[in-house]
Length: 385
Image (cartoon, rainbow, N blue to C red; front, side):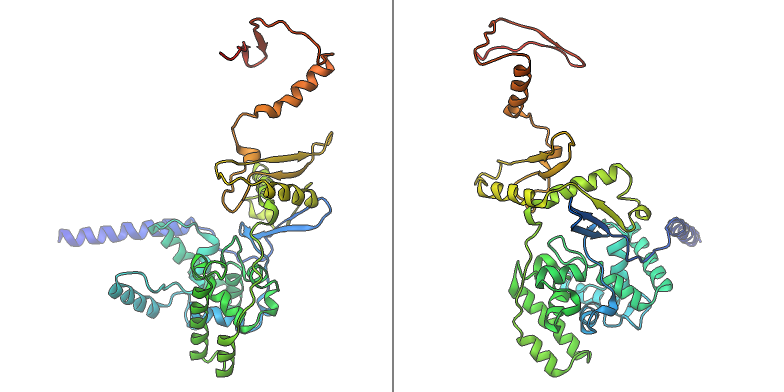
């Protein structure tokens, strides 16, 4: 009898806990316009992001039908028939993973992945799972399958700092997703599963194996004809592979976002909706500086560099570089490094000396001297021993 009471009380407490969490969560909103756009001093668009990552939004109606079909085939073949949770697939995946003693197959439908991609952090906790289930249910209740699919394709991560099918298409193939071929579409469907494993710039053999799996599933589901299947399998894609973070511009981008955060504009999505930021960056100058830096990159990875170019009198920041390679280290040494300025201070000291009538023949007495500096205290330099 006591056990029964304990079970009932425990169940009530768990139910109350879940209700409390769910009750505090906001209703998910699918939006396509909360883009942050950064422009250079000439009003040229140089960066765009959605959901805090590099991205360009594209409407589902602009895509060839085989583009969304390729993702449905490999990620969630029952997308149009379930209500956000594919319980048959969950049970099947559980037994496959159990018998193989490792995670061989995922069980997250598209709606669930979409909720995870856009509304949750990467933490793996029970609380996160509860939130994920709630958001999935709400998304399915509030939006059509087409709206969910559109948001999903624009929220997927494709590696190399790229999120969204449009950005990925431009990165890998130098074209809009509107113009993807069947073969190219299935490559992107393959990559998004695990970009670090399937990106053609990392392991093209893995890409091809995964792509063929996507094509086979599309054929088995009658999404494509036999001819389309074999043509796509035999198609050798030409990859564009845009350079990651060209000219180390992202150091400047990070400084801009840091300023937006300080103004409470970055986290507040209501204010971020359609936010256009015009900066003072001179792209040509920034590229030239990074070209010079690249030519003098040392073999010792511990040696680093930082550059800030400002316009006299206006104090506009024309160029900013925080390191040799943003891909290897995004730490912005131009803004966040606490190292001494060392000899960089000498021109400023010489300037002060010159305006106070010092010249190269001016003599100074070599004796112990105490300097008193406001808000610092006393300072007494000493000769090296």
